[in-house]
Length: 261
Figure 1 (cartoon, rainbow, N blue to C red):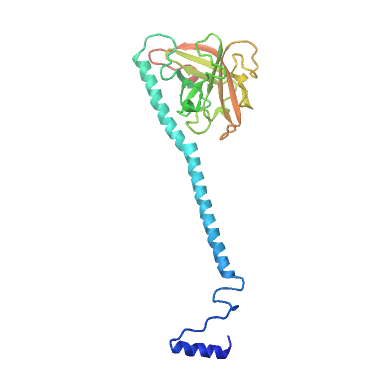
Figure 2: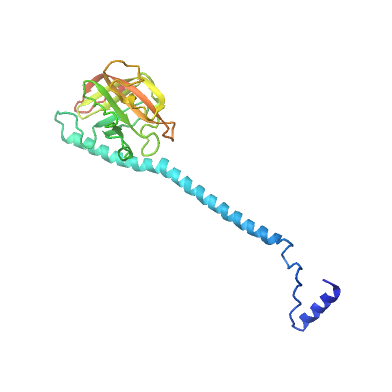
């Protein structure tokens, strides 16, 4: 702006008159030739919004992980304890001999090298069963034998993470370790003879009466534990096989076999 125009504008301002508007092509205050500062401000706002959305998404994801891997365990453990207590109360109220009692669950799995806690076993391996924090015996695609059967494969499944994660530490089981199944009247003591750390989730032959891949060639009284692997995925299956070595009658005090003491 020339000195003459500046003096004219100052006099107009003293008289209360509006200052002369900028001529076309002149730069308005705060705006560059290409609108630089304004454009940079808009970009900064956009970046800020995107950043806040990413932070929110991250928090939502973190909460989902907490829910999936921790809170579902809490809920499932509560449900499993309630159902386990009901089974044991039922057993205590009816001490007479009889066949395998399947009301509310057929018994409890004990695997000291995997967990210090017993695991309630119920019929079925669908998510609605396993999500209760229990282990289930297979009804499909290969029907499981039951412990009292004179031959067959007592095959079980449970979650490895979330919903109780009862088989989370299945990889800690070694050959020679004990697996004990407790029913109302009998303790069934198995000994681990083989493991398969990874196989296809479609490999149902591991559930056969003579389980494929176990090394066994003849029918016997086997137990099979199955779960997902690697941890926090369901891409493959982890398998543990055991064979019955003895049974022990349950006494009045429900004294556990030596393998659990």
